[in-house]
Amino acid sequence: MSQNHSKIHLVELEKLRPHEEADANYLKELTQQIASDKILKYAIVADQKTNVILDGEHRYNALKNLGCKRIPVIYVDYESPNIEVQTWRNGYNLTKHEVIEAALTGKRFPPKTSRHIIKNSDTSVHISSIEKKVDVPLEILKSDLKLVPLENVRTAMHTNLKDALQVYARFLKTENVDVPLILDKKTRVLLDGYEAFQALDLLSAEMVPAFQIDINKVEINATENLTKEAILKAGLKGEKLPPKSFTLLTEHLAINVPLKKLSKRERQSKKVLKVYNSSLELLHEGWPTPLVKLNSFSTSNRSVWAKLECYNPFSNSVKDRIAWYMIKEAIENGEFKHFLYEATSTNTGIALTSIANILGAKTRLYIPMSVQRASDIYLEILGADVVRLPVGLTVEAISQVDAEAKAQGAAHLNQFENDANLKAHLKHTAKEIDQQLASIGLKPTCIIGGLGTSGHMSAISLYFKAKYGDDVKIIGVQPAPNEVIPGIRRVETGMKWIHWTSFDQIVDVTQEEAIEAAIKIARKEGFLIGLSSGAVVNAFQKIAEEKGVYVLVFPDSGYKYAEQFEKPQRLSIEKHFQQKPPPSPTKTREG
Image (cartoon, rainbow, N blue to C red; front, side, top):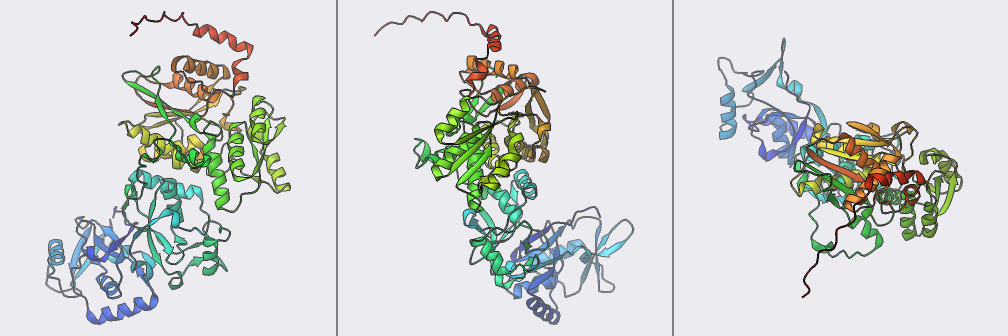
């Protein structure tokens, strides 16, 4: 039979319709057995169209007797010719229509009237053969599914981000949450559904669908010697346990909650006048950063939009997002220290130092010799200890930074490997672009951005590929071979998250092309953008078609890059942008 019966739905008992009466003696025996086991071992089978129970009616009635509210169900298409109904009664022909009518009218057959058979290509089996072993605790089946504030959930273990991203993509694509969380009723410690919890957090959900149970009334499947007390301690105040240290459910149970029902309500006008209670609040409450149309590149058939990350307040760059999120997660995980060491080409260092200052911490920043000298001035004004290293790329300094941080008891957040980098952009940057375009009735056809750590563009790819598939093209930008463009680098130098998703194209850009494009934007749009933003503009010019909705991610402004703009060899570029004398001012009549 081609139908897929892998999904087990957790269905409210009142929605289901039995078509047979129960055998009183067997029902009493089964009810006692299930109560003694404290679990329901197997799912039942029902028609997906009518909710008529096809097998498992005694289990259904036993759960009703025990005060349960839901039951695991495997749905089938009863109209399928591969499903036959037969009868245990001799000389009686039973039809599917009669089964449905008996259930919907309440005129049920006597016990053991029908049996359902699934016909495969060469065999026939009883329909109970598809009933999966689920071992669901009665505590869950007796509980109501409630919406709980996400911020009130306490996690006891870490989650593998790659596992959570699969759930994230499914929720985003279907706009439906099909996984319940299981919480301890007293402490709100999460017992099951860790990947779903992280996916909902990345989707900026405000509420989560959860069953709340007593941990002392269920069996936890845990690694050796891990007690329930240790789980609760890890959730409330202890060190988080490794991923997959424990679980409650042996099978995934599906629910059906619209994602929009869990999402944050649209912010009202409290920030319209832009008043903030702290500089940190200015950062995350100031989002989204602007999305502005570039009219010099747009036509009647093509609109081109720039995502201006220079509006972030600390580094005036996209790196404010990851600095805040890395520090936030370090604090939540008990890994934040008074001294932070980081390899940076400028922007991440400025952002980390700014936030560290607010929190009373100090930074030591390791910068390649190739980075502009002005960076030292900015960082030292903020109070950072700046160390110049004889390397060409920031990533080449990681091992030294890591070793010195460990030796001196400092924290190395490591923007190149820290998954908080990707999460910040999954939760905010990617979603902002989608919502901003949707607010004016648009959907992107192409998004272009530079590759440095690969964090923001990998997140954007994950988000838009999950939601829209190949309808949205994702273009990465890297320096051409033997070229240096601050903030971006070549893929082969090593990037973590770019390998977790797909890009439609990677475009090479020279430094001269990036500077030329940055000057063009300054002269046409009035924005002085950075060199990596200029590289994005040049990549757009190379791949753009006549129609479509294009989004260019501009990571920062150009004010840190005076040294690159002033190089003598760049003076020749001016020839491309000679301006005619401005027209004489129009005379106006004085009032």
